[in-house]
Image (cartoon, rainbow, N blue to C red):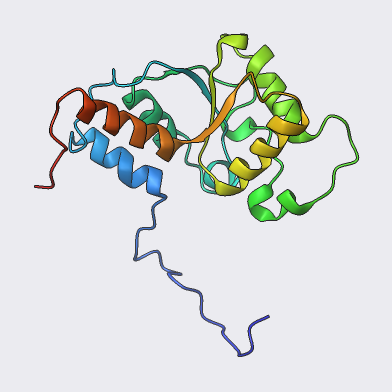
Amino acid sequence: MMPFDYEQQWNADGEVDVYHWTQAVEELVDEGRLELSGTELDYTVTYHDPCHLGRYNDEYEAPREIIEATGCELEEMPRNRADSFCCGGGGGGLWMEFDEEPKPSEERLREALEDTDAGAGIEKFVVACPMCMTMYEDGRKTGGFEDEIEIVDVAELLVEAIGAREKAGFEPATAD
């Protein structure tokens, strides 16, 4: 509860466009301002749609576009986009105790490694939410997946791709 009365709604008329960082970066990629060739990384990955970005804000493509721009091969999870299997961690689900076995995070990692077309060939489980990162790192440990898959944020792939590009002798992209 706020210690004061506040009845207005910020941006109620939608006069200010609000973007997730992946949408802003996708625009930079589309405009060629990051100068990624799409060959910088060579991982087979899957992407987990987070609840707030996906189901609540209907944004599914920006993170996928960034992943593909890095050169990664994206294999879709069996439950993805609006049908994603997510605990709602962004809404506080991260702090809930689950009596069920396996935990939702462990089940999701199992899906990544067994139910995607690439199966055990999935090297990285990509997220776009800090709550998901925490939840899946925990599931990776408690589910025994530590040697099988790495949990990374879309931003980590992007930074690695830009670093690989620069390491290959390309100059960093500059703002126009």
